[in-house]
Image 1: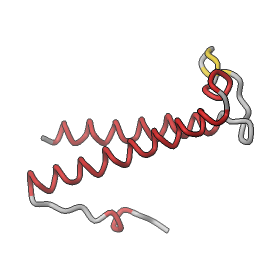
Image 2: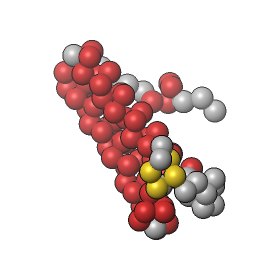
Image 3: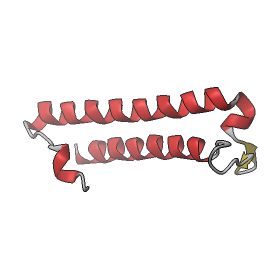
Image 4: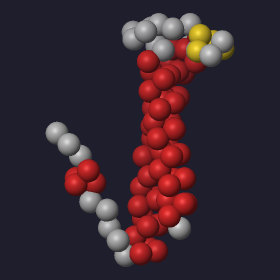
Length: 88
């Protein structure tokens, strides 16, 4: 079960990382035209679709994380308090 939880955590990180790269390449940030030899999302599909796709990726990541926590609670009865892990 631990390996599955780690896979879920890695998926969350990858989705957030990809969303951050899409937003970072936007014209109001770095205005990169290519990434790894390919056109960036905003170049290929436009600024609006790029921004929307990044927000969708973030939403999917958080949705996946929430489902993982629910499944963990159902399997073990252990409830994760996210406030414990937030540093302000």
